Amino acid sequence: MYKTMSDKEQLDLLVQKYGALRSEIAKVIVGQHEAVDSLLLSVFTGGHCLLLGVPGLAKTLMVNTLAKTMGLSFNRIQFTPDLMPTDITGSEILDQNRQFRFVKGPVFAGIVLADEINRTPPKTQAALLEAMQEHAVTVAGTTYPLPNPFFVLATQNPIEQEGTYPLPEAQLDRFMFNVRLDYPSFEEEVNIVRQTTADHSVDPQQLLTAEEIIAFQQAIRRMPVPDNVVEYAVNLVASTRPNASGHSAAKQSSIQKYISWGAGPRASQYLVMGAKTHAAMHAKYSPDCEDIRAVAFNVLRHRIVRNYYAEAEGISTDKIITDLLA
Image (tube, rainbow, N blue to C red; front, side, top):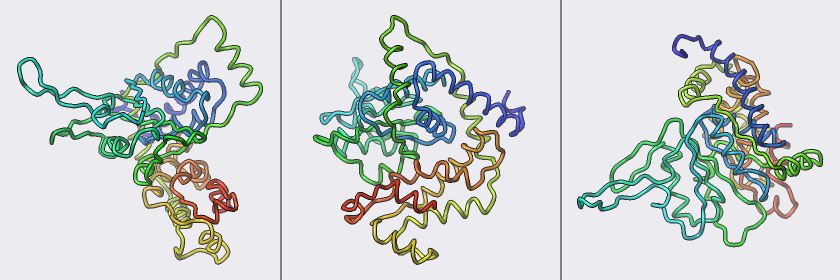
């Protein structure tokens, strides 16, 4: 079906599917509209997403509901201090015929929820690096491809830091988005309590297939991007780097004061890809600078390393990004 459709027709269909997905997910998830939009955006872009929020904000339920509506296989990995890399990727076992046989781990799924990813040591965290970048895992010298499409959606608790292992920058950079979940409003929390304490539950319906997701991803990649939008994205990323050339003296001074390390080229790529998908989901056939700005916080938030002065003065990463966009 999709092979006979033009890119315009596919993008028009994407807008319809996007609206239907939001409505279907809203039957289960009350509020959190921005987080749901960011998850959908990362899926249609083909990127991974890190969800940052306190316990009880339905992060796990949100990811599980997303997997059901998209018709993708779903596995949840609870990250703990004693988790081993083979518990994620799988391992070879000696079967009854005394032959080694590979048993796939939970990473072999369309959507993998890495729950509390910062609660396991770096050695185990690194087991996801190859999977996230290459969409494959290597065990005992043999490489096994992962399903297509494949997404890692990880959660992290920002307040309880005892017994945690901060993700290294190399792994953080593999995530396209870093999405922060806020507390629900009073009205939303009332609806949550009513919905979750009643004697009924909602089972979300499947609205997409893996083939449709791949087709939408390919149509988005073929979307044309004006040169000025690409240059705007690259300039924005370059402005996060201390001592980078081409910035005003005032902006350069503030960057040098609060940032010890800026975003790399992958941020520029994700800004443009995120802007393409954001434009497509809002019925536009080409992104503009406003689409770049719409995804800037989620893309840059985990790629800017603040220095001592920023922490001492209480300057958040979001505040730095806000100043750069201004």
